[in-house]
Length: 134
Image 1: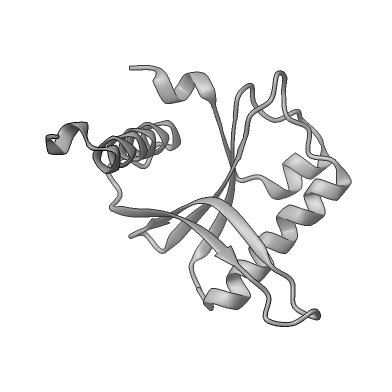
Image 2: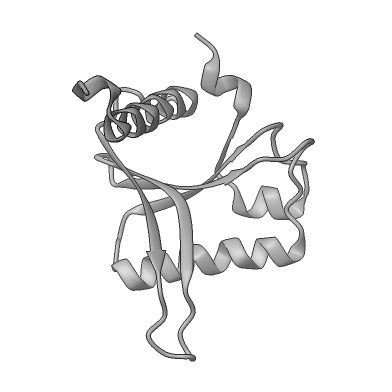
């Protein structure tokens, strides 16, 4: 088996392709970044855990905190999900101690429905077609 046909290489190349497309869609392709997922498991019952689908940690002292949502129509951020998004960013900042600017970013199939929670919480949105356009 050659390196290019190995499962590890295919997984890496798929993730690299997604990162390049996402950076282009966000208009940050010229910014040096490190991409990763993130999860915090609470150590006690009084502490909350959190999981972030994708972090784009940028050299310009900014982190895109990306939530990926596959849906058949515009995604709606309701009151419950808005509270979850707030808690994720608060937990991430508390656990990591980062001083960087956090930009909650939604990556969705068909966008995010306009509304008070989207306007209050979401700094950027990327829709699926932007990931595959030249």
